[in-house]
Length: 272
Image (cartoon, rainbow, N blue to C red):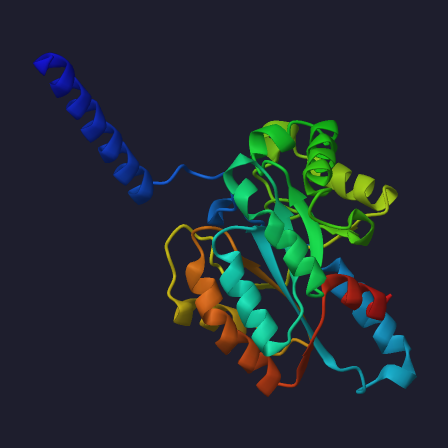
């Protein structure tokens, strides 16, 4: 009896220790990391829009400054804080979402975000590079799985955009699918009618080293200086709480500098 009781106590202690370690060192998620992100995002979307504007005399010096706030890798425990700020500031955003076992409990937030007028866009079901970038077929299977998982939480007919994990010119994919895989995937996305988009401003909040809210804000505002059209890459992943903290100051900076907020699809439609 004493042995059984001692063993039970030992097991309970071990379980408690394991629980505490789990809180301190949560399971590693397959999300964006600094080394995975493309160093040269594809900005052909902006270049084409600028070329059209240059030939349209009626639009010269009259087009308002636009900014799209975009968030990758959610929903997560960070997302409620992001949504709260956006609601308070009456600002729309675009969420490039993932859906897997690690964030299943947060998926209802997608419905909340879409109902609030934010755009829901596709990122990846697993965000696991070794799986999704094995081949173009593997990538589209992942996207199909993501859509299936989102069906109960979003109006799929409103989803028009996607963002490739790591960006459309990332090189981490070459390890698994070869040097030409991203070019092939972009062409196939066009053929399938998807609007894919990178970014031209980066918060650098997925860099591995935890940034303060001040540093996140500084990265965004410095990167936006001199730009009339901004698509800002941020994250609402479990590890980016300081991005939510920085969001009010980021929004205020754009307001002070004359920007109008819109979703990615709204910007696409405006510049088409």
